[in-house]
Amino acid sequence: MNFQTLELSHDSGVATVTLNRPEKRNALSVRLLNELVSALDEIEKSEAEVLILTGAGKAFCAGMDLDELKTLTGKSHDENVEDSRRMAQIFRRLYDFPKPTIAAVNGAAIAGGTGLATMCDFTLAAPEAKFGNRGPPLGTGQRSRSCGATDGAGPRTGESTDGKQSSVFADDEKAHQQLHCRRTGSAN
Image 1: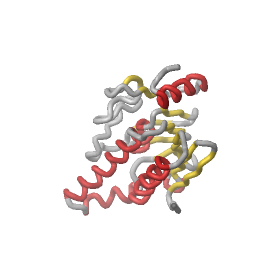
Image 2: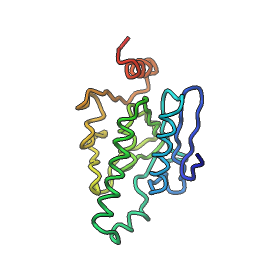
Image 3: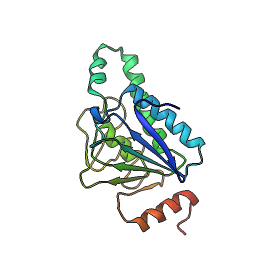
C-alpha cells in the first residue's frame, strides 16, 4: 500500500513503521491514524516477527494535530464520540497486536504520542526523548500517569492487569529474553 503520512519497511523479520509528518512533529491526523490501521493490518499478515514504531525528524509524535482539534467545536456530539472511539480502538489494536511491538522514541512523545509509545510491549527512549500529557483526554480513555498507565488497557510499566509485561530498558540481553518470552510464552 502507498502511504502519505507514514513509511512502512520490512527487513529481516522486522517491520518498521515511521510516522512521517516531521513538519508537524508527526502529529496524529485522521489520515495518519487510518494509514496506521492499514499498516498494522499489513504487518499482521506479513512474515514480520516484530514491529518497531518510530517517528521521522526530531519528534516521535506530538499528539493530535492541533489544526484538526480546532474542528472539534464544529462537530456534533456523535461525531466527537466516534473520533474518540477511533482513537481508543487504535490504542487497543496496538496494545493487543499479535506480534511484539517496540516504540523507538526518538524525541518528544506528547499526549497521544505517549499513548502510542506506552501501548507497545517495549518502549525504548533515546536520551533526548520526552514524555508528557499536555492536553485533556478528549474522551479517549487515555490518561497518562507517570510513565504511561492508561485507563482500560492497564499499566504499561511493569505488570499489567492482563499479565503482560512492559519495560523501558537498553539492555539487549534483557530485551531478547522478554521478546522470547512474549513469542513462546516461556522464559527459557
